[in-house]
Image (cartoon, rainbow, N blue to C red; front, side, top):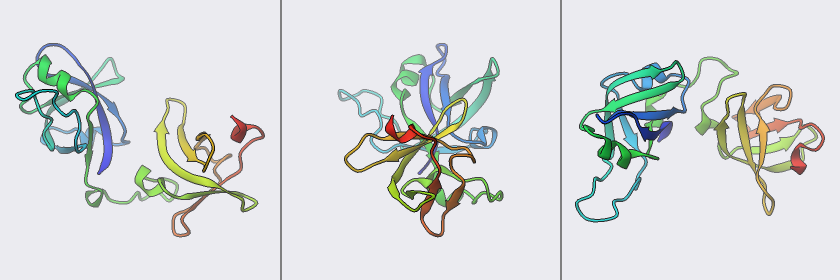
Length: 180
């Protein structure tokens, strides 16, 4: 599954929820009628009879609130209690349904996760564990064996080369970045 969002808190009393967008195409992914898969095992009910997050959610409506928060209504989510049960659920689409980017400088997260990270001198540092989408820039999360993870800003000056075919990302980190 290619994650396109994470359901946040309810908004109002009629089942609308906030969504933390994790896609460059929210208008397409959250268009009315879009069917989104949910993370398996998300929000397992604490007791019998509690709301269980279905394997798929269908977008009924979506709108931007104050220009920065995406509010989504899913079919069948009619009140705040059900909306609250969805909180924290990851929603996404099948990777097979996503066309590769046409821009050679653009990548989907799933294309980068697991790639080896090496310095421009060829020293292997670890691998990409995930991509964090921060407001200022995307961050590559570098997992290093036996050490703490490091956040590397995904900018041309620090990440000059992505070699998908070779399974590696070349980084040229400024002094001290890997020591944090």
